[in-house]
Image (cartoon, rainbow, N blue to C red; front, side, top):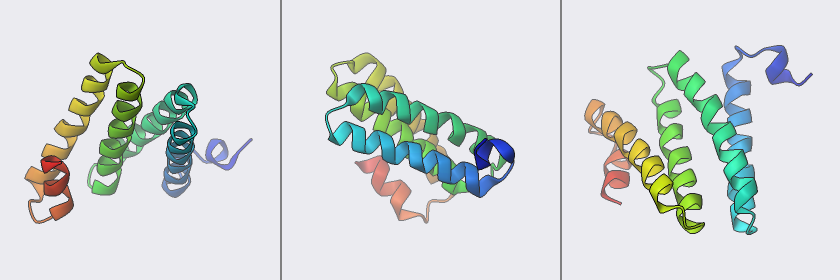
Amino acid sequence: MCLTEADPNKTQLQSDLANSHINDGYLSQLAGKSGEALEAFPRALAIGQKLAAANPNMTEFQFALVTNNEYIGWVLANTGNLARAVVALERAIVILRKLADADPTVTEYQSRLAF
């Protein structure tokens, strides 16, 4: 049994696991293994969604959902699945707009929206 299974309520462990899946997906995509990336990113997204729901005031978890959806959209677009890519990217934009509206002083939110 891994640590995240032994203590699923340990926020830092869950966050670290999600980041590991993101890194796995990112490296898989760079290595030309889009299928593996499309397995890793949704695992990270599932963990991230739980973290964001359980910790709604921690914007870092919300922002991680933005990044994860962007990565999923990137891989889907690179594999020719444009319709699904648009859905993932639109999810990212919706979350990012909420973050930017809630705190317009965070320039990263504004710059990502402009990108």
